[in-house]
Image 1 (tube, rainbow, N blue to C red):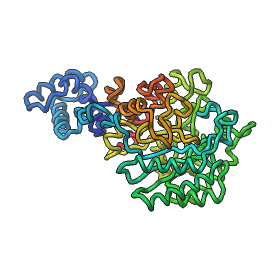
Image 2 (cartoon, helix red, strand yellow; image 1 turned 120 degrees about the vertical axis):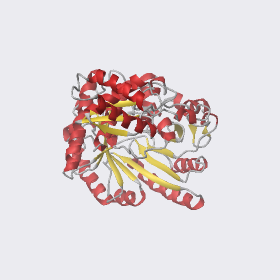
Image 3 (cartoon, helix red, strand yellow; image 1 turned 90 degrees about the vertical axis):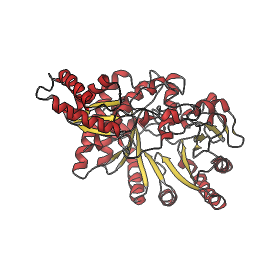
Image 4 (tube, rainbow, N blue to C red; image 1 turned 135 degrees about the vertical axis):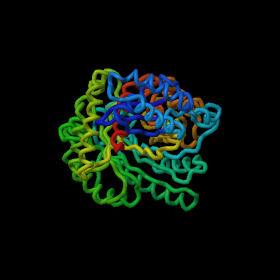
Length: 471
């Protein structure tokens, strides 16, 4: 199976199972596009069969390519057969055969898999009131406001170590709400992790996700010494950001946080960071927000489409799809132009490793939500990820008793591209791994569902990501 498309002035052929990418001229593109139907994935043919096939294909495309001879088509077919023999074109998807009993998790449905990461929600409170906040409009009116006690944070680390199996590197994301509202616990948790490293054969990596309001010299110094990555929330242009990301009582935050984030990033030097924003129906022209962020000096950028409940005025509908896809195309072409003049930047959704990429397990099963990755509430409760917190049906256990909801664990363990009929024949399946389980759940009511709007956005992002790497 192949995916053939034209974008950015290029004719691109993606061999889905092998991941091989071919940039071809117009004639080869059209020959390849009709080849699959005519040959039905037959093994490499002899020269006589190829001549017959060349004659048929020439007749099929002669109106489009009147100057293309049978000999020209034959030479293209010879190249096609060579690529087939090398496993780089029309490759069979054999990965499902490698699964353990057909289960994505290799038997994980009946036993707990080694965990690699925890999202510590150290603060279920926030000093902002963002319009699209996943916490049902913000924390300021919530009955769930709470800071994680140190005892709970320490127990979460112990739980992770005990259930990490042979994994050597373990990841912790300090999340919220706003984690800097519980900054001392973050610092003391890092200190406890360093103690555990000396007692165990483990290494901890830390990430901080912050809205930036409480950044000060202590936060910058400590995080730049101890944290593997820092994620800053910024939505783009000042008017867009201030409309969406307000402080309680009203008022924007752009002017206050930008100097702090700039200082933080400058002092991180070569250490990891990225600007992470959200775009909504208020800024369908979101490529301008990404370019604004790049223009003010940030080179690592992610801007995500909002996912809301149905009929939320900030959310998208299928009527918005064409415009949003066009924004990704517009962004890719501008990134291409900037790279040529040495002013490039990285956009998270266009970052793609065509030479190796993630292992096949990750391509099939995804991010590890609900199996290798869990979120911890201030009370120590375990959820598949932060987007499920508060939904009692999705509670998996707690850091004291461990994962007790084995039924839910089983559902996540087998959730992947081969458990979803729509995914099994989709050309993008090895890049999205079945999509975000939380988005599917909130849109369809099932983690095995398909968030169709998100699928269309993802496919266009991947097409652009591949195009940007094609010479």
